[in-house]
Length: 517
Ligand code: MN
Image (cartoon, rainbow, N blue to C red):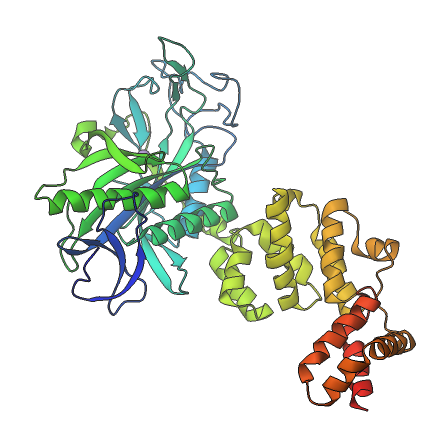
């Protein structure tokens, strides 16, 4: 069992047996809200994480050639001579890719560098036919920025962005199609990537997950990257080190090409655990590049870490420095959409939503638009409850996305109108909604077809109440002698007698009156 070291206040969670070495435990540090630390045999360790995210730019053509970029095309069908590294071919920069990088920089509240430069990063690999990647080394297009993340305890943290630079993607090596040969698909070679590098400000898997989700949300709002990690259009390299509280940074390792938010979070914990064991057993963590084995939940070495000088960076002589005009940047800025943070603030302010509901609703642009359509002219809190509650549950259950939702925002709004004007009560509305999900029909049509209109006819309610009271004379007597709790029984029975369609307020009122005397 772990021992509570100095400064420990509360044990947050114990690592599941078998997952990691016994004795390593997640703890909460005294005096800080959500500090994550790992308990080793020599005390608690802080985890330090920086993320390098490669985000594929949404553009019709590649960064330096006119070849197409669509995902899933026939292998080697979208390759120009430039992408194939033919001698003498000259790269020509794609203005739209530059605009996308600038939009992203603006969306990250970052400094846009009016002058940047492309360099050659030299290395040999079969899927890199030119023998170098055109990238930006000393002079990236975007400088320092910031991403604000929200944590599960409601706190907000700023994660610094060091830089964003533009570079070419490499092709794809395919090793499992032929017994003795590797195949190469150059469709991806030359596609524009934005490499977004964070400061080492992240201190837990949760923060890393929140950062990646927020970054993906911003990129998708901007329309600069689709954020699809399964298709590889967003990949993360995870830099992890550990240290005792208050120490300078220790040596970090880079876990390469992790392709889901969940795997990034798992990789951080696994790599931090490994490093703590190395330090605590008297060893030294060596700087290296590692891979995350998601099946086994461990990282393993890939190669010893290369340094910048190994790549022999030099300015690409085929390309002029990239000079951006101030008014072009201003034009791009003027056409940016409302981004998640601003939208969240507006949802809290103008709809009176809780910060949590607002965060959930703004995470995806499509969800935010759906919500605003439902809320328009209706009670915004009721609309939020339906969208985040029954509607999200229905999407989950049916495996549909909001784009191909079985119920449109107008249809959900129509259902809320029927509740608001007392055509149906809230309980019947849940049934109607389920029918809407199944059939795709409007709420009003289902209510009419199934005769679900709420009964507000006081004569019918009086009659139902009379029958129930007559059939339960014993309980009426008990109620009148002080057993108040029976009131709910009478409501339930009356509602049942009216097939769930009675107006709850009128039933309550009638029962109170009749039971009183
Ligand atoms: Mn890179």
